[in-house]
Image (cartoon, rainbow, N blue to C red; front, side, top):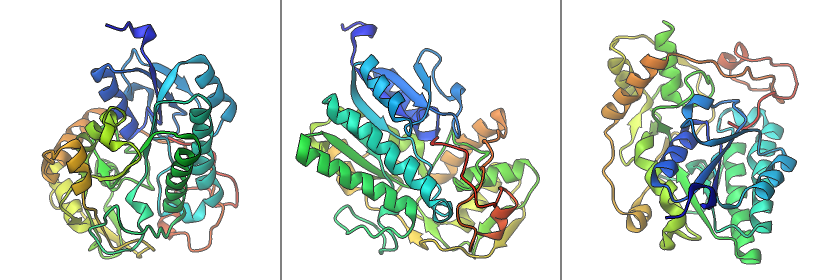
Length: 352
């Protein structure tokens, strides 16, 4: 058996964040590669990771750091999960969005090409599809309508270009509305389940933009991680894009009731805020992923939410670093203004 020190290295970016922590743990358990975890801890937490993982605190936007990691470690696989994944907020932080989600990705991609790695696994998003009818399929033409989705699609296109030019092997996943343990409950701009739980634990009403009839298929993290973590070693996955996540859509109103019931406060109040610009109904077809990775059972929403609630009650709410400012304040939702410095300044955080 290959010793630990001589095993190839899998670099996981955003490793202390939500999905990144689960992917890191899956890779450690599988033992196919030694994990090098990179995260700047702006939205993740060091204790999300196993204690014996090689951890580097830093950002993918630091191209010198990224180059140094590839020089110092025999990186053969990249699992790129670092991103600032706030679709609605991305309209107001364009420079920050593209710096973190595009330029940071290009720093990794450059080194992946230079060092001729074996596989680059990228977590994109169904935000690339935009407002097309659901269920969204990989054969549909992407039409993202927010800067976050545009950034994700940009990286997808660049990976395909790198494959054509350099033969870079890659796999792309488009997960959606993922929830579960290790999600950052202190982030007020993204991850609706975490926001609801945070609000309930602080005795605040659950806030919903619009009338709450928006539909999403909320995906338990444990259902999507096995495919992501195993993908470099699945030959049929190479060069492919996969939707991945839950099958059954629910309204945000239904989600709020499920979370409240799981928290033991079924009659917890809800406050409806003015609607914001967002896709009303978004869920995807997963037939392609099932064909390549096998059809897996999906965790029912109430079961997954209960698991997340049990974890949340033990750890409680933890705060994220404050968002240092927005770049554009025009049409910024009023409910966000009280949460941030709205001076025309640069945000202070970097990818999770």
